[in-house]
Length: 196
Image (cartoon, rainbow, N blue to C red; front, side, top):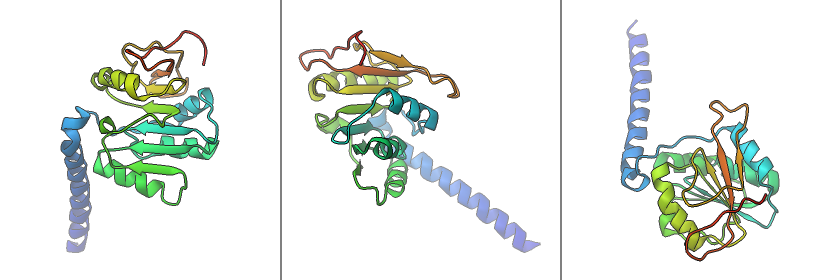
Protein backbone atom coordinates (compact mmCIF):
# COMPACT_ATOMS: atom_id res chain seq x y z
CA UNK A 1 0.00 0.00 0.00
CA UNK A 2 2.78 2.46 0.78
CA UNK A 3 4.23 1.83 -2.69
CA UNK A 4 1.06 3.27 -4.27
CA UNK A 5 1.28 6.35 -2.09
CA UNK A 6 4.80 7.03 -3.35
CA UNK A 7 3.69 6.55 -6.96
CA UNK A 8 0.76 8.95 -6.52
CA UNK A 9 3.01 11.48 -4.81
CA UNK A 10 5.59 11.15 -7.61
CA UNK A 11 2.93 11.67 -10.31
CA UNK A 12 1.44 14.70 -8.56
CA UNK A 13 4.91 16.03 -7.81
CA UNK A 14 5.87 15.68 -11.48
CA UNK A 15 2.69 17.45 -12.60
CA UNK A 16 3.27 20.21 -10.06
CA UNK A 17 6.87 20.63 -11.24
CA UNK A 18 5.73 20.80 -14.88
CA UNK A 19 3.12 23.45 -14.01
CA UNK A 20 5.68 25.46 -12.10
CA UNK A 21 8.16 25.25 -15.01
CA UNK A 22 5.43 26.48 -17.37
CA UNK A 23 4.51 29.35 -15.03
CA UNK A 24 8.17 30.31 -14.67
CA UNK A 25 8.73 30.24 -18.44
CA UNK A 26 5.75 32.57 -18.91
CA UNK A 27 6.86 34.88 -16.09
CA UNK A 28 10.41 35.17 -17.44
CA UNK A 29 9.23 36.62 -20.76
CA UNK A 30 6.17 38.50 -19.48
CA UNK A 31 7.69 41.99 -19.85
CA UNK A 32 8.50 41.34 -23.52
CA UNK A 33 5.40 39.36 -24.49
CA UNK A 34 3.03 41.71 -22.65
CA UNK A 35 1.10 38.83 -21.19
CA UNK A 36 0.76 36.70 -24.31
CA UNK A 37 0.75 33.02 -23.50
CA UNK A 38 1.91 30.17 -25.66
CA UNK A 39 -1.22 28.94 -27.46
CA UNK A 40 -0.96 26.44 -30.29
CA UNK A 41 -2.58 27.25 -33.61
CA UNK A 42 -5.00 24.46 -34.53
CA UNK A 43 -4.26 22.22 -37.51
CA UNK A 44 -7.57 23.29 -39.13
CA UNK A 45 -6.49 26.93 -39.02
CA UNK A 46 -2.99 26.11 -40.31
CA UNK A 47 -4.47 24.20 -43.27
CA UNK A 48 -6.84 27.09 -44.04
CA UNK A 49 -3.98 29.59 -43.94
CA UNK A 50 -1.73 27.43 -46.14
CA UNK A 51 -4.57 26.89 -48.63
CA UNK A 52 -5.16 30.65 -48.84
CA UNK A 53 -1.49 31.64 -49.05
CA UNK A 54 0.37 29.38 -51.48
CA UNK A 55 4.15 29.73 -51.33
CA UNK A 56 7.02 28.90 -53.66
CA UNK A 57 9.98 26.75 -52.61
CA UNK A 58 12.44 29.68 -52.60
CA UNK A 59 10.26 31.83 -50.32
CA UNK A 60 10.76 32.44 -46.59
CA UNK A 61 8.01 32.07 -43.99
CA UNK A 62 8.67 33.86 -40.68
CA UNK A 63 6.57 33.02 -37.61
CA UNK A 64 6.66 35.58 -34.79
CA UNK A 65 6.19 33.70 -31.53
CA UNK A 66 6.35 30.30 -33.20
CA UNK A 67 5.36 28.29 -30.12
CA UNK A 68 5.89 24.60 -30.84
CA UNK A 69 6.80 25.25 -34.48
CA UNK A 70 3.76 23.61 -36.04
CA UNK A 71 3.14 26.42 -38.58
CA UNK A 72 6.79 26.22 -39.63
CA UNK A 73 6.66 22.44 -39.99
CA UNK A 74 3.44 22.38 -41.97
CA UNK A 75 4.56 25.14 -44.36
CA UNK A 76 7.90 23.39 -44.89
CA UNK A 77 6.17 20.04 -45.57
CA UNK A 78 3.60 21.47 -47.95
CA UNK A 79 5.61 24.04 -49.90
CA UNK A 80 9.27 23.35 -49.16
CA UNK A 81 9.79 26.95 -48.03
CA UNK A 82 12.56 28.04 -45.71
CA UNK A 83 10.87 28.57 -42.35
CA UNK A 84 12.16 30.83 -39.57
CA UNK A 85 10.54 31.05 -36.15
CA UNK A 86 11.14 33.41 -33.24
CA UNK A 87 10.25 32.29 -29.72
CA UNK A 88 11.07 33.73 -26.27
CA UNK A 89 9.23 31.29 -24.04
CA UNK A 90 11.94 28.78 -23.03
CA UNK A 91 9.63 25.76 -22.87
CA UNK A 92 7.92 26.55 -26.17
CA UNK A 93 11.34 27.13 -27.77
CA UNK A 94 12.63 23.76 -26.53
CA UNK A 95 9.47 22.07 -27.76
CA UNK A 96 9.82 23.68 -31.20
CA UNK A 97 13.49 22.73 -31.41
CA UNK A 98 12.72 19.12 -30.47
CA UNK A 99 9.81 18.96 -32.91
CA UNK A 100 11.93 20.26 -35.79
CA UNK A 101 15.10 18.21 -35.17
CA UNK A 102 16.29 16.88 -38.50
CA UNK A 103 13.98 19.16 -40.50
CA UNK A 104 16.28 20.92 -42.93
CA UNK A 105 15.05 24.37 -43.86
CA UNK A 106 13.52 25.17 -40.46
CA UNK A 107 15.35 27.60 -38.19
CA UNK A 108 13.85 28.17 -34.71
CA UNK A 109 15.52 31.09 -32.94
CA UNK A 110 15.48 31.87 -29.22
CA UNK A 111 15.42 35.54 -30.08
CA UNK A 112 13.26 38.63 -29.67
CA UNK A 113 11.71 39.44 -33.04
CA UNK A 114 11.47 43.13 -32.06
CA UNK A 115 15.27 43.25 -32.32
CA UNK A 116 15.39 41.29 -35.57
CA UNK A 117 15.29 42.32 -39.20
CA UNK A 118 12.16 40.85 -40.78
CA UNK A 119 13.00 41.90 -44.33
CA UNK A 120 13.71 38.30 -45.42
CA UNK A 121 10.04 37.35 -44.92
CA UNK A 122 7.95 36.64 -47.99
CA UNK A 123 5.19 35.51 -45.64
CA UNK A 124 5.00 36.71 -42.04
CA UNK A 125 2.71 34.84 -39.63
CA UNK A 126 1.73 35.89 -36.11
CA UNK A 127 -0.74 34.93 -33.42
CA UNK A 128 -0.20 37.81 -31.01
CA UNK A 129 -2.28 39.88 -28.56
CA UNK A 130 -3.91 43.09 -29.88
CA UNK A 131 -1.74 45.38 -27.72
CA UNK A 132 1.35 43.98 -29.48
CA UNK A 133 -0.12 44.41 -32.96
CA UNK A 134 -0.04 48.25 -33.00
CA UNK A 135 3.76 48.41 -32.61
CA UNK A 136 4.03 45.41 -34.94
CA UNK A 137 2.24 47.42 -37.65
CA UNK A 138 5.00 50.02 -37.35
CA UNK A 139 7.71 47.35 -37.54
CA UNK A 140 6.01 45.86 -40.60
CA UNK A 141 6.08 49.33 -42.16
CA UNK A 142 9.83 49.60 -41.75
CA UNK A 143 11.02 45.97 -42.06
CA UNK A 144 8.73 44.03 -44.35
CA UNK A 145 9.40 44.23 -48.08
CA UNK A 146 6.76 45.24 -50.61
CA UNK A 147 4.86 42.25 -51.92
CA UNK A 148 5.15 40.29 -48.68
CA UNK A 149 2.08 38.65 -47.18
CA UNK A 150 1.30 39.19 -43.49
CA UNK A 151 -1.06 36.80 -41.71
CA UNK A 152 -2.50 37.48 -38.26
CA UNK A 153 -4.52 34.83 -36.42
CA UNK A 154 -7.52 36.02 -34.39
CA UNK A 155 -6.74 39.74 -34.27
CA UNK A 156 -6.60 42.43 -36.97
CA UNK A 157 -3.44 44.50 -37.31
CA UNK A 158 -4.22 48.21 -36.79
CA UNK A 159 -3.74 50.53 -39.80
CA UNK A 160 -3.72 47.63 -42.25
CA UNK A 161 -6.61 46.75 -44.53
CA UNK A 162 -6.93 42.98 -44.99
CA UNK A 163 -7.08 41.55 -48.48
CA UNK A 164 -8.90 38.55 -47.12
CA UNK A 165 -10.42 37.36 -43.86
CA UNK A 166 -10.71 33.60 -43.39
CA UNK A 167 -13.08 31.91 -40.98
CA UNK A 168 -12.28 28.21 -40.98
CA UNK A 169 -15.69 26.61 -40.42
CA UNK A 170 -14.56 23.61 -38.44
CA UNK A 171 -12.30 25.48 -36.03
CA UNK A 172 -13.51 25.62 -32.45
CA UNK A 173 -14.50 29.27 -32.26
CA UNK A 174 -14.53 30.26 -35.95
CA UNK A 175 -11.96 32.95 -35.11
CA UNK A 176 -10.76 35.00 -38.08
CA UNK A 177 -7.43 34.84 -39.86
CA UNK A 178 -6.47 38.18 -41.43
CA UNK A 179 -4.36 38.20 -44.59
CA UNK A 180 -2.61 41.37 -45.77
CA UNK A 181 -0.42 42.14 -48.75
CA UNK A 182 2.17 44.83 -48.10
CA UNK A 183 2.51 47.35 -50.92
CA UNK A 184 4.99 49.89 -49.59
CA UNK A 185 7.47 50.58 -46.84
CA UNK A 186 6.97 54.34 -46.67
CA UNK A 187 5.17 55.61 -43.59
CA UNK A 188 2.30 53.43 -42.43
CA UNK A 189 1.96 50.01 -44.01
CA UNK A 190 -0.97 49.76 -46.39
CA UNK A 191 -3.18 46.89 -47.36
CA UNK A 192 -5.43 46.74 -50.39
CA UNK A 193 -8.93 45.62 -51.16
CA UNK A 194 -7.69 43.75 -54.19
CA UNK A 195 -7.37 39.97 -53.92
CA UNK A 196 -3.98 38.47 -53.12
